[in-house]
Structure formats: C-alpha cells, structure tokens
Length: 220
Image (cartoon, rainbow, N blue to C red):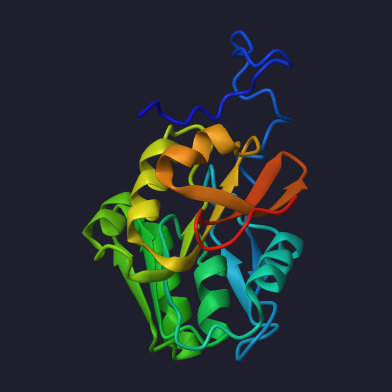
C-alpha cells in the first residue's frame, strides 16, 4: 500500500517541490496557558497547558465542532487518544459519558499533568499511559474502539502508521478524528477502508471525521 503523503501537492496533482508543508505554518510553541473542557460533566473546567515546545492543543472552537459532529452524549463509548498532549480531546469525550478513555502520551511532563488532571476530576473512566499511541492502537483488539483521536505532530511522519493502526482498531460504526496539515483525499483513505464524513479547516489545521467506508456515505 502506498504511504499516505501529507505533504502539499500542486494543482496538477504532483508533489510540490521542497515546500513541506505548503499549508500556512503551524504554531509549534504556544507557551504556557490553559484550555477548557467545553461540555458534559466537567464543562468549563480548565486544563493547564505545560510550557513545552511543539505542544499544539486543539482549539476550543475545533473541539466544539468535533463534538457537534459526534453528538453530545458519548455514553458507553470506548475511546483512545493516541497523542494525548494536554488531554483536551480525550477528557472532553470522558466528560460526555465515554465508558473508557485511554490517553497515550510519551513526554513525562505531559503524563504527569494528565494524571494530575484525572485525579482532580476523579476521572475513573480515564486511563493515562506513558506509551506510544500507535503501539497502543496496534495492541487494541480489532474493531474494539468507538472513537480514535489522532492529533500527531505534523512534522513527525506518523500519519501513515497512525491511520493504518486506527483503521484496524475502530469498530465498523466507529469514528476516527484526525488533524493534519492538508485535507485527506479519497485516494489517501480508500486503501484503508476509510472515508471522510466531515471536514473543517481552521487556519493551518485540517480537522477530519473519518468513518469506515461502508458504514456511512461521505459528505462534503
């Protein structure tokens, strides 16, 4: 299978020479701050954002759109956030009733912050693991997850492996959320058995809601 290439492409479909990515540059360091949980049990709860290079929390507006796409009640859902970072995506799912949420993160400072947040929230449905998120997806039983959250570092070359692992782990009626520097195409996703259900551009970020191709027709 040809790897998914998230570099920019020219209008003719050929790869743009040496400009990676061609989308507007993504801020790599926003500095110390906070994000907030938007809905559910922990609505308006603020999460600290550690002062770490490369940390790019999903903006409130994009998360609000994502959970409008998914629906406000995720009761019983099994979720895995493969690149948890601040935990904003996975904790938002838990706040809305998800039965099981695994937050995967490799940076020790972020793991400590995630565990502290879960303790403060008494988030018993959330498990924080210091581990590689792609490996965790590969270890998951096939078709066992209702929601996979993918927000990998844009410059780390992880999209192909992450999407392949997510496509295997998600249930036939499940959803995959992906942030990327360019929009996914049918050619990118067809070999994985996936399709775009929803798409949003927010600055340099393209947010996608992906489905198993047979479960729902794609929409614009």
